[in-house]
Image (cartoon, rainbow over all chains, first blue to last red; front, side, top):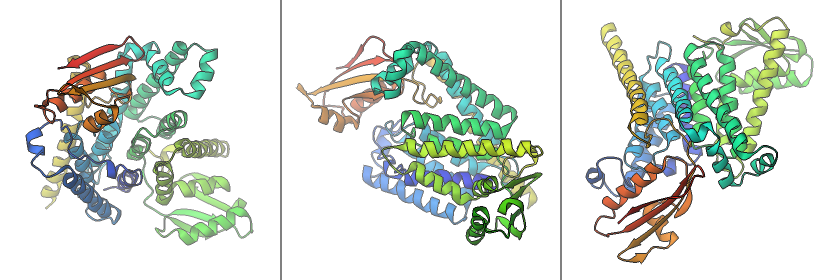
Length: 351
Length: 121
């Protein structure tokens, strides 16, 4: 399994565990098919704990880098069995997790992850199509009813200025255009860094506004974008300056915790810290940002902070949006200081 | 050896393509066959405000009893097509609840439209 796909599978498995989804695994209640069969496979509790145990064993294998493809497929199959055995357990976000885990295991470990890429395209195309074909989405009825039922405070305020149906229609069309845009851009594989940025911003904005993670979607959808990312296989050069400023101190701290040897630390560098990423040299805060973004541990921490059950997921969403803003500022800075060769840049290239 | 490895990966790719093709086919089928949208990537696209009332052997169940029976609140918001809620209640009553002769009434409003009633007697 390629490192980007392995990281995706680990992030989804971790999110499943820390968000409490593990405890929500099916207890074979009102199955889609095979009612007679399901009733004879053991008590609901025994069935549930068996699924939990299999999931945890497969997740352990995945995190220990043992039989990763089998582990990933097993994780996905556990969720699929859960869905088939309970109509109540079925949710789109769980189905998506299951499918990307299974596809991650089925991918050719030596080739580009086409299966996952087309899964992403299919998700956004079908989601956009469903909205487009619903009259209640096109004319704003859906959003108006949804927000009024939830007594959303921002909606109440804004709808005093803009009529609810008009506001609803604006938001509906923004979602439809975004989803079709993501499907098209991911299919054509043009401007992938920008598309990934927009996709993460889209899901995170939904979390921020609605104060809920939509099950596993907030992690599962952005994690699957890793299918478009080439994870660096060679050490990236980091230059740590001799001057005693905050960036050089942070650089030396990162050097101590870089157990995977992702970076090759060398003396030198302007502004205390430099990261060489393809033809781009990041300096200072930008170098620190990209060192963190190229460290898998960062994503594990973000997933834990984002998915641990909490009353205010919008706080984590706000932090993610700040990170996205920093990434955008870093890209602008890199472009100003000599051009950003996006396609050649490890970490965000389109292979 | 090379041939065996290559065939193994091809099998994985073929299975993966079948999974994607089945999904794509199901999306088309879901839109042509009605309003259920199972496995058709229609997440949280519906605002169904509903109330379930159930009576078993002539006795009306309390809201807590309804929740315990269906693992679903007696009143709430359902974010999938209403037909799926009907399917769920119907499936419960024709399997787990079979023989109890439950009378189920579902009142719901989809996306703020006028209320509709579905009954299972």
